[in-house]
Image (cartoon, rainbow, N blue to C red; front, side, top):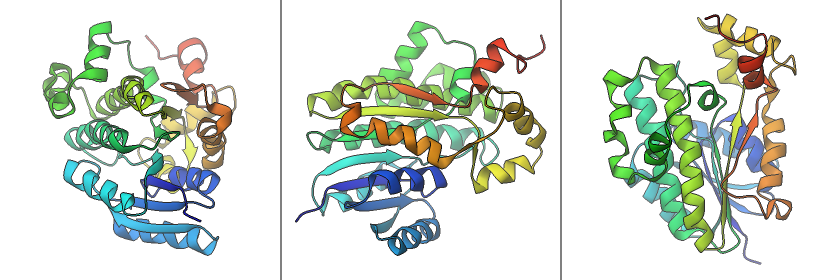
Length: 277
């Protein structure tokens, strides 16, 4: 019996948790910029009975995205997409954050949307960060949602002189991810497919642990201590929501973003995490 096909971008803990939740019985192509990371996650999943092939993929390159899509299509139609690839404000400069998280995600959603199978479903991982920056104008949101992909990085709001720091670049990228999901879900819908987004808060992963112990550690610890949940989240809790969105129980959900942050964003606007003015 021919297996359904899932394309997973990013060999991080959240991607793996989602892939384990929705990837059983399916063929999984796992792409990551560092092939050693893809190999390591593929081994863990293979040892647990999953059918996973690792593939080197650079999200910031359309040619690389096209290559992983072509590799996946060797096994049939792509039925599922999980995009957990990206870089954080502490990992990369402004230019790289915009090229990977903003442009790269737009390219991946566009290219997979051209070939996604009828009945298929996609999910991209954004961040709570996109919710905490000041609101953009309706025109700015429209530009992030609908500007042709190859013109995105030329937008005035994304020029270096208009971006304060790497966190601001990351917030813009994640806001763009969510607006892009809204626009792309229309195109995906014409193929009978759905597309959604999750925006996690502080999730315990190896990267998060590095952040806790780094220069911004006190900021992150304060955030989860003062959110209503009083703790950070886990990758499996993100996967719980992803499983709903990618199952038949989520059949009427498309173009949506689900905030999974233990209430940190609520606390930022209306609770003890409000910035001091």
